[in-house]
Image (tube, rainbow, N blue to C red; front, side):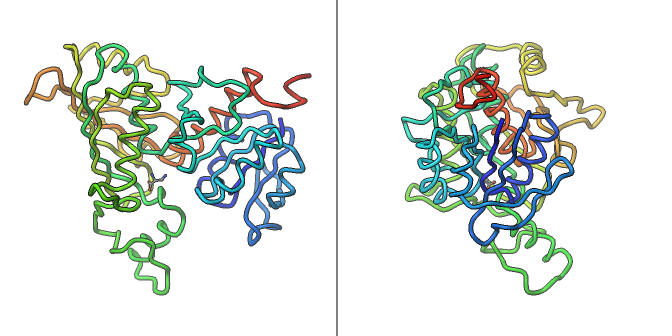
Length: 337
Ligand code: 2RA
């Protein structure tokens, strides 16, 4: 299948290439795409060099699927053009996520809703994806009333410039552009994305609104505090969940152990719990510190970690592409043949 990766030179774009290769996605032709200033650059895929092309050339090449990771503005302007040409877009930006005409997909949860008419499919925000993958099996069994989440997010969520800022601060390197309003090394910023009129950040409201949309249940109450920390391996989340129904801890662990895409790492006596360092480069969502909230009934605490560039972005997008391919939901001669 012909696949375009739009934003192929960025942090998420490079991860998409890696994930496509690792998962052996049947790529008959790879079309790396980027803005004018990156056209002509080379990217590597499965040991071969590919030349980055323009958006126009990518549309003319008519890939079956274009995985976009090029920012909201680019996506708003270009995804419809790809879609009009019959190319299915899987978009990593926030541009289409809350559009009621677009699906917001985490394959383990709601890929079954996809149809051939879905030409622009939204990939949720990284911090939301890892949380809902762990919450869905528990919601199905005990029905979630309210979630209180605090995040500890990797600088890779901001992009390469943020990783450069962190390491420049750490090594004392001068002249590196600052992307955060304060130092990030040896610091913690309770500020991800822009502040909104209600006092929350956009990242916090993504967690509230996207959770309801993906789970297909507006009754789930979510409140979030999203925080940037000086790590690169993945995002971590302290999640407090109140259910409608009583639960047994053993059943929670069993449900999570059997949940698709989840790995339980919960053996505190042996100091086993999820960490960004161990989640880094992995496709799964890791859950640990599973315990009852002793301050009120029917309430659980857990700790969720995932590589935000993987399940939080590239892996989820590639899994959507895999689902589309497997179920013949895209326009492709290779699929029809
Ligand atoms: C972040 N959620 O970590 C963003 C990336 N999509 O900043």
